[in-house]
Length: 140
Image (cartoon, rainbow, N blue to C red; front, side):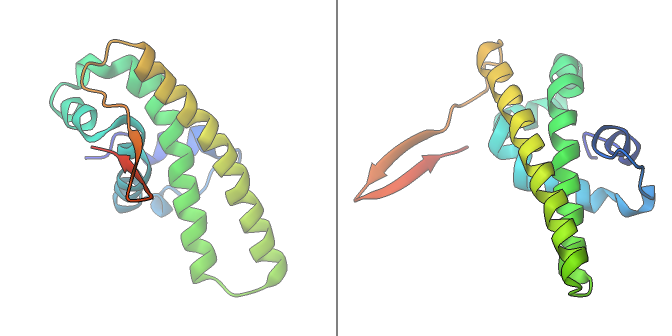
């Protein structure tokens, strides 16, 4: 079950509400997999699903705002790929994605900083290291 509802996404990420039917669970789950796991790490996400009461502040004030904009990015990216190639509309949609990206990165920074400064013992800070000249991110 997704961490955030379509109604919450609409309220957080859209100034003009969109049809809730467009924000289905598959889109939300895809955004969680693509964006959220790398931000909070899989151990915290797994523990959150088992003990949601331990993460109320984290979820309501940090994860949901970040995830709402991630879903917006996924929705508009999908819409651009599936729509006609009218240059004006495509450019407008790309501008929306770029703005949502900027906001989501700010929300991600707030989320990660909160996790690092808090008492979330399951968080594993990704370690960048070089192996044979290749930059490796150690994400769990």
